[in-house]
Length: 562
Image (cartoon, rainbow, N blue to C red; front, side, top):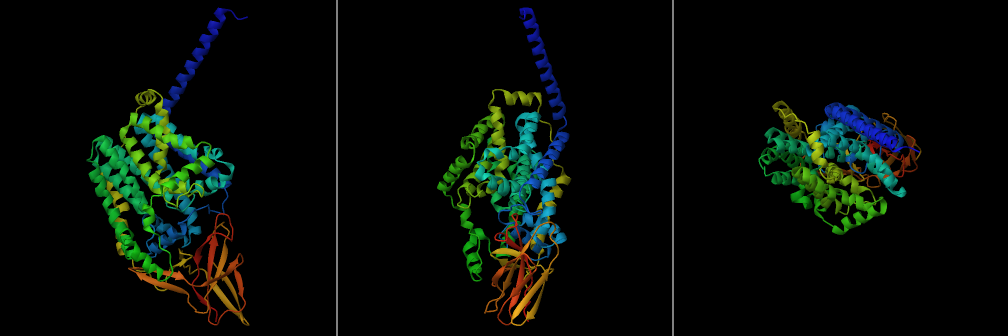
């Protein structure tokens, strides 16, 4: 039996070891916190490794992962801009303009563009988002809290996978997660990154009353609006943050820096649609109806269906481990965040609430389909910061962290940096949109199933007559490791290939041919076509390599049968 003296010595030894361990941990944290760039580099490397592991294991077709909607519109728009032609402007100009040099280098179809686009997303934009989240968290509670938040940002997308119900895994893992980590050509991921960077720049400008930082924030947020006009929902965040801080001066350079993007967007819509949809959506729909094309209804962005939001919350409860956790975390975190930084709390709350209301209430947004999370992606940094701030509900924890490891002094935005941002994000886009020429004849893009699709001159069709039948064969450049299939089209008795409508400088041409069928072989036999028929072949692909799904990524020029 142990004597009281021995027990006391053992207890003292255990306490000593515990204190020694805590002191060692503190020294390690201090060393890491004092080298934020090195820590961020390590986290970025970990992020790349996790994305690589995910990319290799999730279902994909070469470089094609589940996209979710506008990828062909965006790549076709980008390629047409690179060809110095104005496209129908149903999407924002920002992301297509940024990708235009890549599309000119690799070809008109989005399949060829995916390798460089994914590399840009993962290697450049991903670390930018990590830097922005780290910077915002540092302003809240110091450098160690920033490291914890940045680490959670890297790990959390994968850590929550087991919390989804088994039958929802396909929608979360295969459909949503690739876009959330930058494995698609959609505009949601760059929107999220740009808004996070803009938020950090504005918060720093508020803290330091730096007009250059506020102007830089305005340029970045303006380009985010150019990428997706709905990103204007973010603007309530900086406005509320400035009101809470009782410092409205940064709003002046911030607002002025927004104006070039707003002007460019108006010119883009006017030239590409013949009208600015917010003011004249009916005219755009009437013109498109002349060729049977579907025009997006701008009114849907303002259709607040509260029952749809209620259904989405109910479906989170249906599919996720705890809906209360998802709903409670940002509300509780808002309290903790407001105790440490009322300005960041105001910005994050207004940012997330605006997207939740506008995107969560539209019938296009449903948890059951997975679209709810994709549409809210630009507001994920706001939700994340709110949820992470639940740690600050622990009494005195935030104060202690900030006192022991205070936030560093960020570098101010210099004049050269501001001029560079202004040139890249404001001057060059406006010049390009003003100077780009009208669409050529014959059209370089056509609407196939109401999706803007590039006409690829490299896709060559040969038609040989075999009695009344026609034997089609074709060739096209290899599309890397992605498997493709083909859709064969032919004119009907009317002989009509495409129907076009002019709208300003842009022309919309709708494919009027009939679909003969789908094949994986580069050949097709048409038994008895009408005399003088025209043929086109479309190249199609999707992440599942399913020929019953997927859209045409490029289409050939028309070829006559005789």
